[in-house]
Image 1 (cartoon, rainbow, N blue to C red):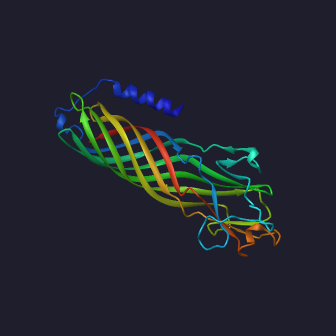
Image 2: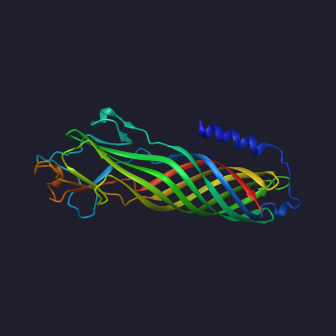
Image 3: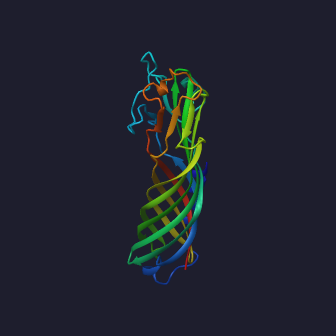
Length: 285
């Protein structure tokens, strides 16, 4: 519903008559501006995620965890999403998207119909992405990462058009840094688990990445403009690890058969992809 509402609002605003117009269409978009954005973000992780294992702790993932009889301990499989039971039959919840909002500042230069600019922005997000594994015990194990916020700086190149150059279509791309909340959960109470070397199974980390997108903007009231923008964000998230040790489990625990110090878990999908559609508003000085 958020996406549909934003689209209706944006189209209604952009299609409305301009209340005031610059006397010089060739410089209409030149200047410093401040503004904000409101929209919806969704995880674009797909359905191919799983958990990888490093049984000998050599830093190389892709090992198979086997029981004392040689059976694959995770033969029940994996799913994209948070497990809702100890077995795959319980299903997995879908990844979660939510509202995105923030503030931006920027500057544009117009030369004829071409517009060049730079924009910096800060956004709050509510996007969650999980991946689960199931062991034959039976038990579930899953990673969840949630994007809390991003800070980005991007270039943008646009084309002004319309009778008075009131419209501008543009492409934008740049660098982004995101704040991630990482969490690990399991129904296994026998073994000991540590996330990224800490005693808890929840922590925060920063991830760097890139952004790219397209948008359209229209002057509607003098120096005030509204726009509609689609933005793709990719964050490199390959640092989170869970160490599984013996704990109170038996000496035959599959997690310590190869290396007595335990086994490391990590996600297979190292890139956290987010798609956002936002309504933008700006005031130019």
